[in-house]
Length: 510
Image 1 (cartoon, rainbow, N blue to C red):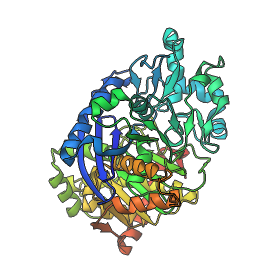
Image 2: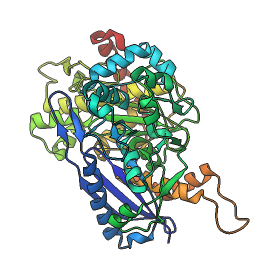
Image 3: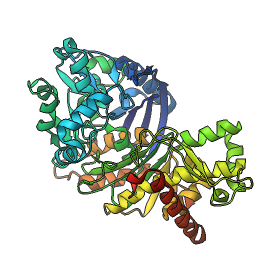
Image 4: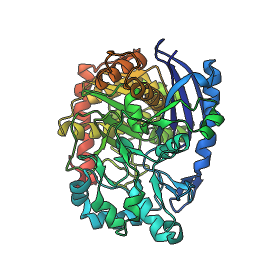
C-alpha cells in the first residue's frame, strides 16, 4: 500500500496530509499551530524549533486519523512558507530567529539592494523579477548589517522548507521553485545569480553559503535516524524536493498546465498560473517564479480581500450569514457606490501607502447592504486588475480554481465568474499546499527506476498529471459560469473602477 505524506509549514501552523495512491484517497490529516514574534517595527519572526515541534505533532495526528503505522509511509515532501531566512552555522545550528515573508523590518536593506541592482529595471534584467522587502535577499543583508558576529558564523542559507528538509535528511539543498522567491535567483536560467549575491557580499561567504540546487522531480535523501525516531518512520523513507507553499498549492489545485488559474480569496488575494516558459514582464507586479514541477509560476498578490470584507463585517457586527444576505439583497453596482479597498495599502497595483476610500455616496445608496456589496466588488476588481496583467503577458484563463475563505460564498463565486468572464470552481480538499506536497512526494518516488527489468519509468509530466487527476477533486456543485447580462454590467463597472483608480493614483494605469 503506497502511502505518502505532505507537510505544509505555514505562518500560522503546520498541516500534514497522508494519501494512498492505490485507493486514490486522502487517509488522514493533522495540524498544529505556530506562535509568532511580532514588533511594531515590522519584525515578524519564528523559532525554527517551533516548526519541528509542530511538524511532529501534526504528523502524529495525521497518522492517527489515517489509522496507519508511520512506518508504512514510502516518501514525504515539505511545503513551506516562502521567502524566510534560516541561517545555519557549520554544525547546522540555527543562528537566530527566522525572519518570515511578512517581515518588513528589512525595508531599508531592500531599498539599498534594489538601488544597487539599478532599480526595478535592473532587478528584472538580472533576476527576471523585482526584489521585494518580503524576499530573502534583504533579510540576509539585514543580518550582515546588524549582526556582524553572527554573519561571521554563517555557513548555510536555507529557506523554511529547505530547513525542514535538512532536519529530515541532514542534507542542505534548495529547489528551483522556492529558491526563485529568494531574490538571489535568476528565474530564466534556474540558477543563483552571482552578480546579485556579490552586491550583498563580495567576500565569497554568501556565495559559498548558498546550497546546491535540485530540480523539482528529485528525491533529496532518506529520513535520518534522529528524525525517523521522532516521527516513527523508517530510515528508508524517502524525502522529495518539496517547494514553496504557492508552488505546492499549484500542484494541489491541479494547476500544472496552461489555461488554469488558481485564485485565493483569503486575507490577501493570490493569483497564479502555469507556464512552460519564463514569464518576464516589464511590470514589477508579476512575480515570475519557477514552479515546483519544472515549469514557471507567474504570481500576483493583492493585499485586501477578506481583510477588507472583515473590516465591513466588524463595523456592522455581522456574522457570515448576515454578510451573505447583504450580498443577496443588494444590486450589482452597490447603488453606484465605488470603493478603493486599500485598508492595508496595496501591492498590485503598487500603492503601499494608499488608504481605503468610498465614493459616489448619497442618502439613498448609503446602506449596509450596499457597503457590503461595494467592498466585495472592489476586492474582486483588484483581482481582475491582476488577471488583466496576466492576460497582457499572453496567459490565458479558461478556468479559475477558487480557494480561500471567500470561495465558500456562492454570491462571491458568481461575482468572480462575472467580473473575470471565466468559469470558476472550488475544490473538495481545503489543505491544497499539503496535498500538493503529498502528490509531489508520490510523483518524485514514482519517477525512480523500478526493480522489474524492462519496465519503463513513466514520463514526468504524464505521471504528475495522472496523480493530480486522481487526487485533486473538483466540487462540481460550486461550478459557476458567467451570466452574460451580469458580465456586461460588470465590464462597465470595472471600467468605472479603473477610471477612479487612475484619478486617485494616476501612475497605476494598466
